Length: 366
Ligand code: PLP
Image (cartoon, rainbow, N blue to C red; front, side, top):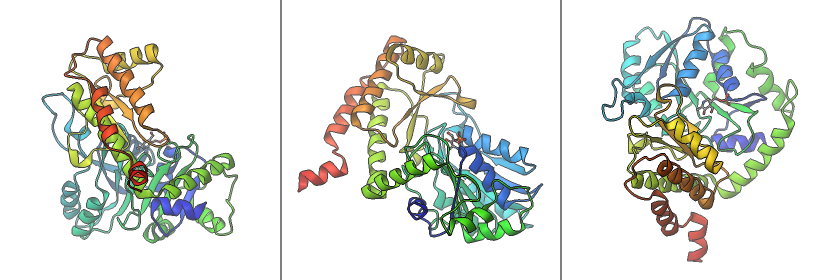
């Protein structure tokens, strides 16, 4: 199972597994690598980046938050919550840090609050171009096993992930994938840690044990999830998500509503954020859809509360469950009196029907 987990992260190095939700693994990444008062560079991509920054502050670190400046006049939303990490801003900031006070760069790969999947390889290139020794810590809690992710190839030092998204499990286990540089940093890092400490976990995992009681039920589930994902092949898993995402975006475009991610290069294959027209309370629409159709949509979080809702298209899902979700949204929008340009359901049906999944296409070709 540990070997299978490494395959999912695309790493040859150890992956620590915690009986905790993703927030625990966020904390673990910081306390194992950093010391009190260390400066860390974070990027405001949305609610989860903001929560990770708050956690860093509570640990006594000094996070600096970079962001895309300004507000989108058309929707009133901050640009930073509609775009991905801007690697050139990170490079600029690191070049200015000649004394190497910044010890880590922390970014969210798939920002679950906005539907943006940032380019992590570009962040690695930015750190290297600046010739800066900072560690690269990445939250791929909602990206892993749905969006392309390469821990070793992209030179990530710690990847944080969780069980309840692309791994299709209940919440309750989370991960730190490590690099040799991160393990080395942990030898001198001074933030207090015990439960989260990598050393005993990595050592005991070598003989198949944990230093404390692992979350056995979920590990059985993880073993099944790994079988499913690795049997399908990661490329097929990513293609499956890209296809669902494009079908859903087609629906949103047909409705005439803005997709929250304003940069097509970083559309998320995991979820799509839909902005409601100014003056229309997205949470009232969510409530109506929940009450009428028993369909629960993701809420707008933090700075976009009430202005958007989220449609998830990840993991254990299929064309028909997605079509049902889109039908629920379309009926709800109509009941709420939101003017729609056209039928998103029709657009998505046409897309899914004319774009068979990889396996279906292979079968048909055979
Ligand atoms: N980071 C991201 C990107 C998330 O989507 C989440 C949860 O949805 C978290 C962090 C926090 O993880 P958890 O709620 O499992 O503690």
